[in-house]
Image (cartoon, rainbow, N blue to C red; front, side, top):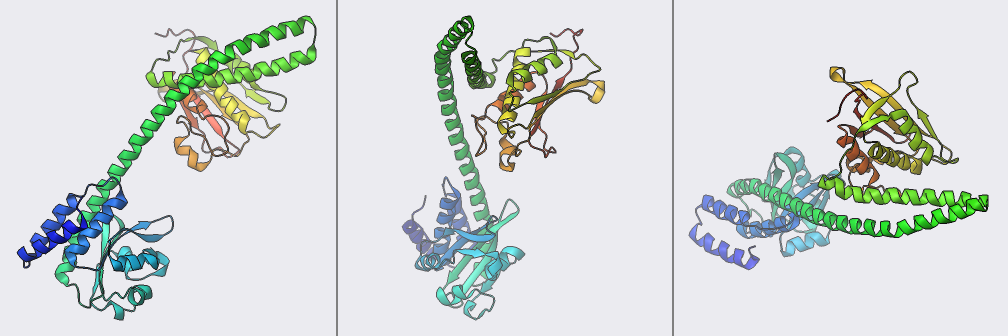
Length: 431
């Protein structure tokens, strides 16, 4: 990274040696732009601004970047000069498009602007003319990867401070500043990705250890509940038996959550095996639904009445995927509102038959911002209970069966998920 003092010395020496050689001035500037080594966009553009303010002999260099969220040009790269400091103090480093001005005009049209008497230009913003005292100004568009992203502006308090050669120079430099900005964005993104992967790895390790520890604690609790249940049965204590059944349900749900935690690690390592066997899908779906529904949270099951659907699947894994989908639906459905489960056979291309299990709830639906990462690990909405692993595990199980798990985005009555996989009739032999 070049210091401002070093840049000043470089410019002074260069001015003596190349006073009549603008191409050499451009080359020196471009070489120093390429030497900028920054891990983020703001730092890179600030270094570029400081380099350009010295090279052009300006009193202020701004690199404005358009912020679409607020429809405003924001000076990300600002030179370290007195005029730039006054600009920031006055709030002129943020230019809403609605306010107009020459900067906005250049951004919207792509046509460069230069004036040696900006104070007489009625198209110039009053704050720039009167508060900052700008007399000369050059503005050129800033494009990154053929996309208009902002602009470069050079300003001076002197009249006729710039000429056409300076404008051509700024236009040429603008293309290189766009490359510097693009490179900084790539570095910034790569750094964020590395940090996110490190965070994810650490979280995965902690979760796996926690899941193993929880399993160790839950096993003796399950044994105690079973012991008390047998004692309550002998003594016909119906109230205690009812409470123990609820406790067993809660314990089973916790076991499911822990298994999901452990399966997340196994799935990532590719060590989860699928053991296929002939399974009556209607019975499997009804059994899972019956084990999860309650009086307050009913589950309606629809299965084909004209066909006995038997296929080769891993019944344990498929039940786990369905439990995750149903548990998720029950969490989000209003009390008393039934969750709908439908088992269907559909015809795919090439006359191949597929099984589809659809689960729909009556909740508020999936938040729009969550949809792109819905099936990632630990993906949960702001108000969602749970750890956000059920859908990740369910999709992995679907894929292990050669199938898919997808969000029914066209369903507007709540959230709908469709688990599909190829039908392998019982008479087929599976390797």
